[in-house]
Amino acid sequence: GNSVTQMEGPVTLSEEAFLTINCTYTATGYPSLFWYVQYPGEGLQLLLKATKADDKGSNKGFEATYRKETTSFHLEKGSVQVSDSAVYFCALSDRQGNNDMRFGAGTRLTVKP
Amino acid sequence: DGGITQSPKYLFRKEGQNVTLSCEQNLNHDAMYWYRQDPGQGLRLIYYSQIVNDFQKGDIAEGYSVSREKKESFPLTVTSAQKNPTAFYLCASSIPSGAGQPQHFGDGTRLSIL
Image (cartoon, rainbow over all chains, first blue to last red; front, side, top):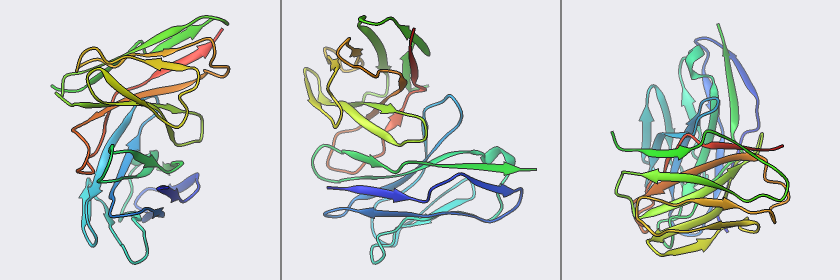
């Protein structure tokens, strides 16, 4: 079945550091890929998405590129801020069937001033 | 603004009780989902519904029940058969399947056992 594996946390960075959170996936067919962010006590918010190979999703300085050859969708940001502290989830959704979405375990990011 | 409303934000259950978590959306989405989130873990699918009056079990449906009588509403009942109900519950919705569309989430309900 479909699955997502993402980098274990927690990740602690200083403000303005470069961020990478690794995500790889296993899927039959051609899934859509997503990054969600969760702030304490809240639900998940869509951060960015990519629907086909070589697509780059971007939002709020975050980027991720859909790499079919390496089955990866790594999240990057060039300069993190304290306000980026949250839990980040990588997810995939099969284009067929019931839009069943599979999530990674989440990576907690803490950014220190 | 369109969105998903979950209530209550915090809920407490006594042993042997059933409790119902509310989820309402005004996004005009056909599909709705319930997930369970445990500390340090990803989301696990409990139930989903693609259309009114129809729903399917997810990966961890035992001890839970749902109904879908209206497009806007998808309540989840945590029954006394669920032996470890303490968790954060998230409701989501999306446009119909086949397009790999993102799901939109509510702010969750945290359920605890007294």
